[in-house]
Structure formats: C-alpha cells, structure tokens
Length: 240
Image (cartoon, rainbow, N blue to C red; front, side, top):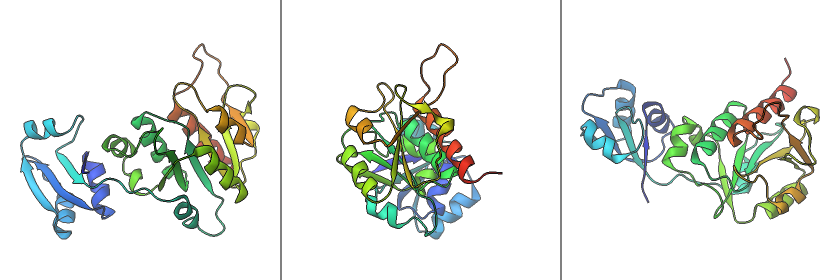
C-alpha cells in the first residue's frame, strides 16, 4: 500500500537516502533545486499540482512537496543487532503499546541524534510507520531501524540471553533515573501514553527508573520522557 510523505526536509531526506519514491508531487510555485535534481537523477516521476489539490492529499504542512512511496520497511531484530558496529555499546528502545505517531516520530528523531541502534514495536499493539511518523521524525525514519515483533515480553527475554539489560520506565518501585549506571548493552522500555508498561513487560525489566516530578502534573509525555533518558544515557557514555 502506498504512503504519502510530505514536507520539504522530509522529502529531501527520502531522496538523499534513495528511498523508493513512486511519484513526487510538486506545487506549481515550488522550485527547490536540490529536490528536483535528486528526483530527476533517480528518474522519479514528477507531477505538478496546485496548492488546493495538494492540500486535499495530506493533512499537514506539505510545503509544496509530497512523495508517494511504498510502505516503510521494517527490520528483524537480528538485522538491528548485526548492524551495531563492533565495540559500540548497544542502545535499543522498545515501545510497549505506544499509540501516538507523533511520539514515535519524536523518539526516532531523538534516538538518531544520540546514535541509538534501533526501535522495537509490537505488530498489533503499537503505532506503525506512517507518514505522520516520517514527518515528525524529520528524516530519522530513514536511518533508524525499526523492528516489529509479535510478543514484546518474549523479545526482551531473548535479548537478555544475548547480554542486554532491560531498563523500564515506571513511577512505582523505581529508582531516580540519575542513579543508574547506563554503561551496559541495554534496551530502554517506554510504556504507553496512558497506562505505562504492562505487567509482563515490567517483570522482564532488570531495572526500573523514574523521572522525579515537582509539579502537580503526574507524568511527562512519552517522547519527552524518552528524550530525557536518552540524553542521560548519552551524557554517561560520552562525558565532557
């Protein structure tokens, strides 16, 4: 099934990464030389369209560029692990029933910024790779490998056998996130927006961490919490 991905920077990232683009829609008044030259070099069909037509194609700011692509590819967990360079400390993020595509896009973007290795989502219980995820990720969807699994808890158990430590985010029976040493091959588990990690996922975790809250709001947005934790991991692994 085809997907529409839109926005100047997202489309440009697609073309630079040579993602298979079926058709590139360009607004009549748009003329980004790099986008046009990349598309022509790859013999991509270019269609000019009015703003009215393009506004009806997608719901969001397309900035004059919409790419029709095939579905985003997902990877096996083995492909993610095998792609980690020798000597690098692995860092994978697992999402437990995350539903919001904006959160997934933001997490992909942040993980790419800290040099993470991949994301795990469940096939039937989590958001999938969509045009909204692509837009929010600002191109990171092209560079961060995503694996879809049928059973997250079992996948985490298998990763533990491979030497990974599982660190989950929780508000109960958890230590302050600043007290844990993250210098280990690890999977960071982020729970769903509403209810956090499921019980079976919690039971697999080696450690549970929480973010201290001083105000009256009881929790942070999932992608914000993930971003804070990823940079805590980064700051420990790469101290100034």
